[in-house]
Length: 145
Image 1: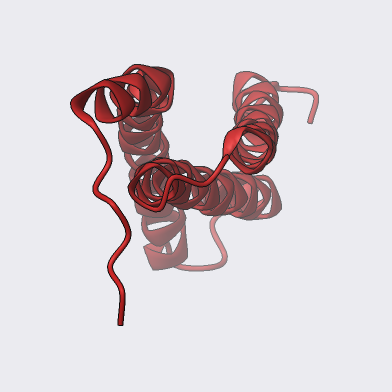
Image 2: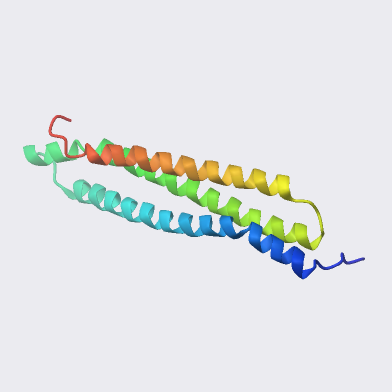
């Protein structure tokens, strides 16, 4: 089995420069997932607290009416976490493809660009879900709801 020629220092340097932006995106996604998990924990804690309330009391019944809204928020946050995870995985694949392509001296620009666009699309979907969840949470204490 013939091993390919190893990439030159210049080629590896070029790949490192090309994967700098995706690496920053990975950091941003990690911070974003941390924020999402924090919000999810708050919603989950509230759901558990409302579930623990006994039925029958009028004020408690009014509080329990908020359950569908909380479940909707949890669903949106869960989807945002999923989309963020997919975005991070695709970004990692992008970096891997870039280095493997350099090692085998294969052009990778189109594949990497496609992975980058798809990763950003999933990140955008996660952001949209966060915006939707935030919109619901702002109206959470709306007395007319």
